[in-house]
Length: 274
Ligand code: BMP
Figure 1 (cartoon, rainbow, N blue to C red):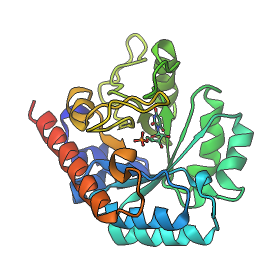
Figure 2: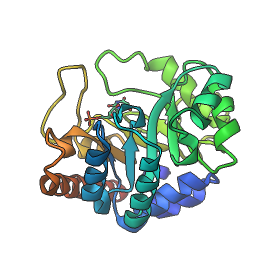
Figure 3: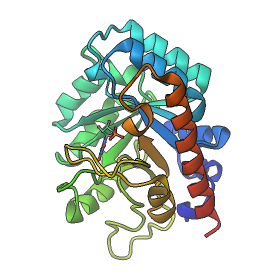
Figure 4: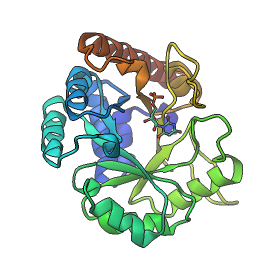
């Protein structure tokens, strides 16, 4: 099963080029760490990416929180991506009708589809949201994650909602390559007599922290070991646990990234042999 396959071997489970690129990058860099850089100044964003670049397979952005955004920032982000060998995940959380999300994904100020390898969507509108986004992203080789679960206290993405999200993904495996979730989704949402044993989806897990248990706004943290070893997650997403409160403290930020990378990889290696 995917849980005990190496990342490199799993690249062959996918036809989507972004899924393959992510798995090959993880294998090459021996890092299943994604850093979520939620800062509001372009210069801080670039400085943090430079600091963590050697230790990550992925950088997750919220491009719409950048106060001084100018499209020239994108070229600089792409250069760093090539220099340090990681992919971009724009955490846009699309949630509208197909026609609207296609416009939001392709255009506006941020032109997400033109640079983000990966983005995500809430399954709440139903399969039409995948149709809308794939009408833009599929031909570009992009990938989509569905938010099957969330890390926050009181999340409504549970039970049959989560199951339906997995069913939607199974119907669109060319474009939907995985989930934002807190655990593996293997077998979840499968219909009677359906063979889903060969299904592979990437599980990306936010709400990861080694020190805090949560924040003042409902975020809940688990450790890399809990996520990757116990729950079978593939990629840990870490934000404030790495960049802390001072975006200028780049040495400390690099050291933290190295630590999370080591913890995430150790948990994966333990998983392979258990
Ligand atoms: P932090 O590690 O600083 O708590 O940041 C977590 C990041 O992951 C944020 O960018 C947030 O938007 C995102 N996220 C989350 O925390 N929980 C989810 O369920 C889904 C998310 O995208």
